[in-house]
Length: 82
Figure 1 (cartoon, rainbow, N blue to C red):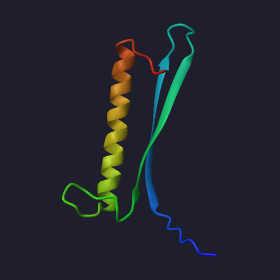
Figure 2 (cartoon, one colour; figure 1 turned 30 degrees about the vertical axis):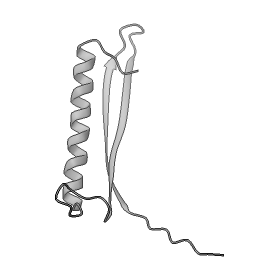
Figure 3 (cartoon, rainbow, N blue to C red; figure 1 turned 90 degrees about the vertical axis):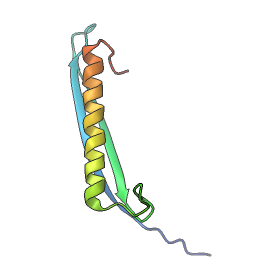
Figure 4 (cartoon, rainbow, N blue to C red; figure 1 turned 90 degrees about the horizontal axis):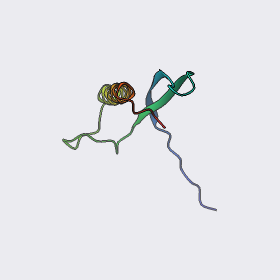
């Protein structure tokens, strides 16, 4: 039988949580989302070079902040996460 080589890449992850009060039930609701990328030679930037751990950390944190801001703005506008 042929051996399969498995390579595990380090994952850089950030979790963001949004809380709001449901207008119908008056309960506090939460929505949590995980944002992640792995440090691997295939994860490349626009210049074609592999991303560094710091570049990935900054991108993941940026994506998480943008999602949280967008979701909070949607909640203020009356569009509640489904």
